[in-house]
Length: 448
Image (cartoon, rainbow, N blue to C red; front, side, top):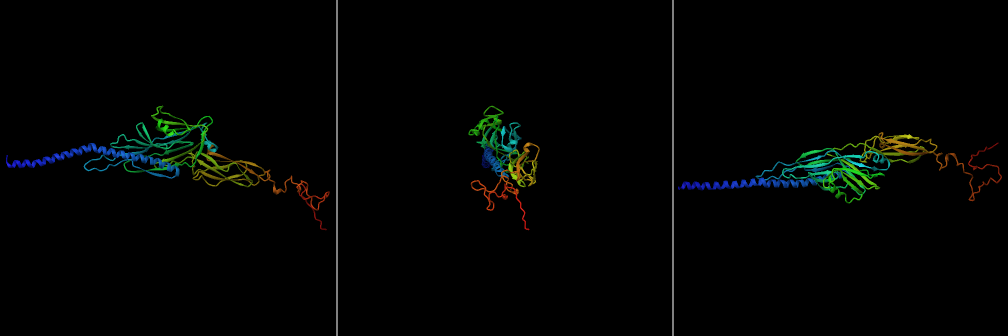
């Protein structure tokens, strides 16, 4: 072996070593790419999903704030996730997520009875149940590695995770809490898919400014029928401490661990409940509320004298029992004397509109007056104010001061009931006293 061949062999050895080392490094990078990166990506997606679940709970809290304050709320949501950069390793593209509303469903309230003008709308014993539309709000992830990630759903105040047909409640408000019924529904449509943070706009369509007292009818208990994907077992956990819920049944299944579909709550009879209804618009949409019924607030059953004035106040309400502004209400005197005129052209933000009833001056006795106010032809869209107008001669409780002493008045008497005589009038005097049984007297003065 000559020296040249030995030198060549020595020069090749480091090259081979470098190639082997590079091969080992490439193999390690390949193993990291195939095993470590998916694990790291899956961990990032899991952590992101936990954050989004918290953001959906923030959405629920924002809806409650919007209803309580009557103001719009902007809640931040981060539908997707971007991954941390890694040297020599390749990440998949950023994962997206979708926030969207579901199809429209209905809440039904049956066998409700209320008092007063509110009863014209709420008494459902002889008509169809009251129906209120609502929607779910869902977050649907589209991860690269976390394939069993749950969808997070907001539904009638409850937030839960859903994986196929399995649901887990993460936050919930009781629809029935003692004698209080609270229902907040969602309107509007939104479908937004992105990676980066976005703002979800919540607009108050109808806030809980009014509370209505309702109970079951004489023959049937009050019932609530609501759409839900929770199971009967989960509803049992939610309602177990409420003694006023006497029964609850699922329409879709009899299995306790399967989604209910629709849940019917039967409430205890002979109990009066405070019902608060509200609605919010999602995605910047605020639904214009339609007036449904009218109530009298002030002035009914009032009594006033001839020539007097009486303030009459109405309130326009929607199907959530909350005030509706901008509605023109007309009023007229349907029976009896007098006129009525509006103070405003339309209902204000409190749903109220004021009228002034004016009684004529020439009423001579007690007269019954009926004033009818309304904005439509249905009974629930009209109210009646019953008034009484009395004239001076028609009020038997007070004497007519303009006509002199009452007819039954006689001359003054002493403490024994005997008539008192003037010093100038002796017994047997034929002269007439000025107190002669209340009759006026006259005389002529002769100066000749």
